[in-house]
Image 1 (cartoon, rainbow, N blue to C red):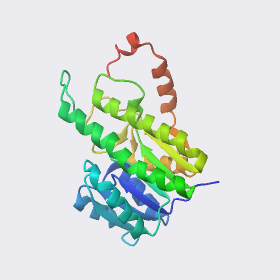
Image 2 (tube, rainbow, N blue to C red; image 1 turned 60 degrees about the vertical axis):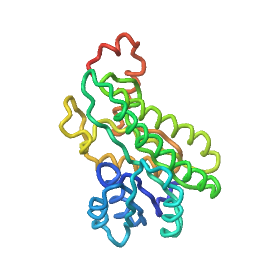
Image 3 (cartoon, rainbow, N blue to C red; image 1 turned 30 degrees about the vertical axis):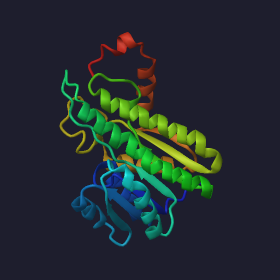
Image 4 (tube, rainbow, N blue to C red; image 1 turned 90 degrees about the horizontal axis):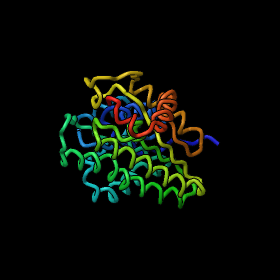
Length: 246
């Protein structure tokens, strides 16, 4: 049975894949609550479908605010069947740089805040015996690359958390979908060297929604050809992987 994505929260919707998902869902008739820190960007996104998109200003690092905000959004939407966590940060990390503040920021935004939102969604959907959770992870979580240890760690943690939710909730009719994009043309990746198979945020969003609408829990790479890359990379012995320049 295909999933119905009609009353949706998108966390991290002021740019990138989150913005593209919010716009596409609204275009298709969903009532969408978008959550992000930058009020001006939220208003810009909402202007694409003001009758269907509600805005909520929130810094995802402020996890203590999430329960009250979650309940408020559900009440104002008149229900909830889908939660998307698309917030993420990837600060530039130089060769030889070991910056705990950057690493902590990535862990809080990319993992801890996701747990704050998605735990609430999982509990609600489990009780309702239906619902869809979509998490935007990354192929970067497949192995520990030397270029940005904190980012790889955060995405590996997010993917594992989503897998655990999937294993816990699927028996209750809750679909948990992990999206693992490769290189996406967003502000986070713009200007970085060595990018290939680059896709737009809109392409990534369409692929994510196709996977989510199948009505079952899943994990998928976007575009799909990254699955082969991930398979090969996982098989590489550490002494070979260590020599790769990325």
